[in-house]
Image 1: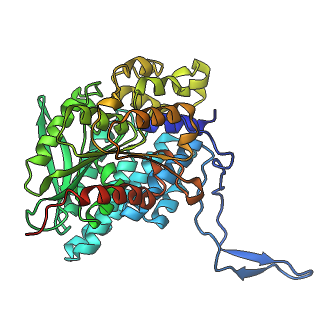
Image 2: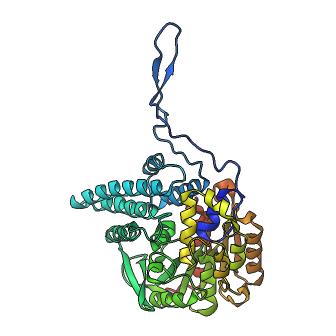
Length: 447
């Protein structure tokens, strides 16, 4: 297995993805020329202007960074999470595989974009301010990647990311609202945006992320597609996610317990139609969500990307849990820190990744006890894993509701990666076309 397998397994905690031989292609970021030359015998070389000259290039031989840049960064462009020019400019200055360099460059771009947003806000230009502050929020979030929990910037950048999205959210119409749900001595923070003004109850999608997500990730993953289609959008940090591990709240086998508080909150809002409440879980959320549906009949439909019937069995196939001390020593700091963070979020000693297998004992659900309609999505590349394929089939074969569906999104359309991060339009089309058809029957009749 190559390192790209490692990053997919570790960062999102769902599957082992085989390496595509061309995925690790490196584009050197050396001295950039702005023109080409033509040589004529006996004369000085003549500079020739080339309109298509690439003035900024990026360079990632490190396959973990390559995957992260292509999926998490560029994948968010359509949802206002990044601008292509800003993303490539940042990437071109990152030292290959170096966690500190990644963090420094994204924080630098975040500050630049934040300043632009604040300038527009001071001038009363709300649309410009909203768009800039959204991107600044996500850039601060990207700067958190591979940042260890004892780094003081972890709280600083996470809070900055959250505060900027809250500020941008105030300029949406209807606004994006920030909330906190009391839970076991702390709170579960999240965001809610109504599909339209007023309190008319409509269909609602709650989005739950995976093993290394913040609520902000879920916003940039799918929120615009949600309210564009007339759905309320809601997301939240569960124990193990966001900054909650700093409060001693780690991932736990009974994730349906905190999820009950989330559903309670959603159904306490007048805008939420209780007959059209769906929950979508991606990455490790593909296990948390169906487990919740086993225990909570108020959920009317679920989607999983992909389905995690038994997290322990998946972790047992991951190369990082089998790595020797020599292999661990050879990892880039970007990968090494990412693995440590995953251990931290599961309450495992950061230098003992093998402990992740035992830590996931009990993270499972019984498909036969999930009575609601269910959609399973998986990228074609991820589906090549035998264990991933086995768990998707196990889920589909045992779900009792006839309204169940498996969709493997195609590599030929740029939708092969874990969670289909790199083609969010296609992913959203699959999710919402299915939900639209399902909820059409549950829609209240007009008088």
